[in-house]
Image (cartoon, rainbow, N blue to C red):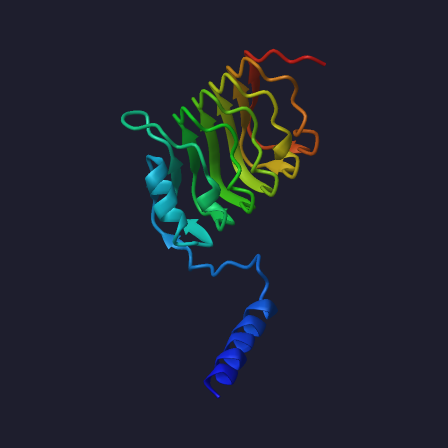
Length: 189
């Protein structure tokens, strides 16, 4: 008799889990305040909370100290930041994968001094941001993942990205409210 109950219980639990979408994550309410993620452990710990957004600024990377951030995957639950996003001084970050669900930044986006950053993979869902600055990313070769942005209230700047092959990804931007600065980039067209 116990085996029948155990079998029934196992089937019931399997049924419950099979009815839920395996891609769903249990999102937590937005984080209130500024978030400073200085190393990979802090990225992992913050990401484990599955916040849906941040009502404040988000800083990823740190100029002084341990610069070991290489994986933004734990931040995949974030869909918006009601503030600025700075991704700076990350020696091992190659892509921005993990920010794939980020749709809105209600401040500026600054991506700078990430020595190994090759592309902006991970920003493909971003469709709203006020200003963008991309600078001193010497390994950056493409910015295609900015293709869902159609307008900027502020400016747009790319400079000192010595290996940038083209500016594909910007073709959908039809309005820039501030200045446009493209300098010290070797564009091949």
